[in-house]
Amino acid sequence: MRKILWLALACLAGSFITAQAQKSDADKVRELESKLMNAYKDRQVEVFGAMLDEDFVSTFEDGSTYSKTGYLSFSVTSSSHVDLVEMPEMKIHPHGNTVIVTGVYHEKGENKGEKYDYHDRFTDVWMKKGGKWLLIASHYAVPRKP
Image (tube, rainbow, N blue to C red; front, top):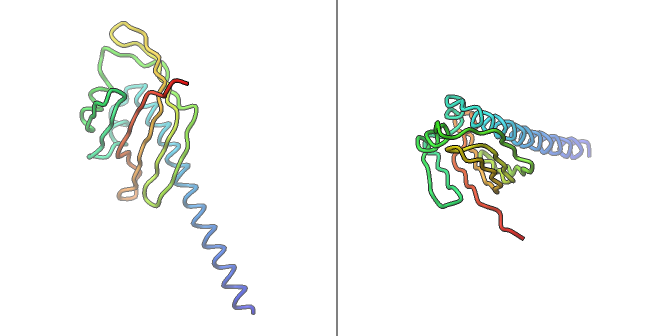
């Protein structure tokens, strides 16, 4: 009977440790999302670029796609200035060494002298490679109007 009790406790402890690891991965990716958006807003290209996988791809609202190099170039164009970047809603979905993040994205700024105010839905896919979380794909879509 004692062996069965110890086995049950060991299984529960293993489940708890696994749940904690998933929670810490989710928390880490949540922090990385925030760091990524701040680096984008502040044009910290080195920080921003280091978080993107070499095979990163992003799809924008108009259907255009960008590789890592294209996305970094687009993000630091001198004709635009980002005033606000926020993600008021974000859900984290861990799946082993991959985490999918979905949510609401809001950005305000100025591009070529014109003010803009974007409200999007987004999906980001993060993958743990070599012990480091990297963003491998992003997709932005304009929310459907009610």
